Image (cartoon, rainbow, N blue to C red):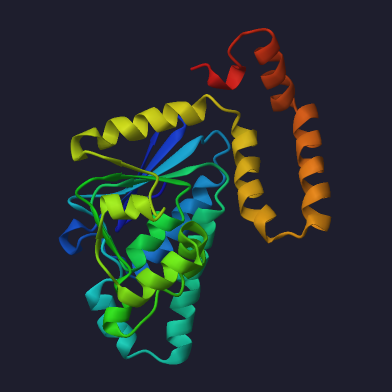
Length: 262
């Protein structure tokens, strides 16, 4: 796997650990981060043995949003140049959100502005209790546009309206209460909590997990005339699949399915 300048990826068996590596600017992202992260996730998509991705930040912050030096350049750019980079960011969020296997957010510190978008596109986010969160865009006359679709899905329209409008800075417990993150743990328990979650994920069928992600993402936007045949076909295909057959037989024979064996 190629080397990157702003991020790093360590493969440990069937888990990829992806880290923002700009601690000197609290892991704020710029165009280089966007393009390197996009390239990395496209490469990881080709790794069919992958069972999960853990996304975190180096140092004390998770991701502080857009880099200030990059923003200075953005101010001077034309609409067309801004649109190109905005589309690239929107595409990155979409790639992570729709990734084949689970993406776990290991939120080790502050997630601000666009940085919260990387929290929102994770399937499951576990945060250290010291972390802070804010949709701070309105404070500088902007809005959380590219991250909006994913945040609204997580929070619902009511909470999204409140926090998009106020830009209120919230602690980890508040982020949990509104549904932005799935679990809050003490800072020294973050690694253990993520490891426990990964073990739980690896005890489940990898294809089933991938289909489960599609189920949750697609069905809410379907009318009954579409989701009834869609879901019926989905379960029928899984029942006759190699993984489904193995899982059901393992359950009936009271043994561990093949995918759960190390």
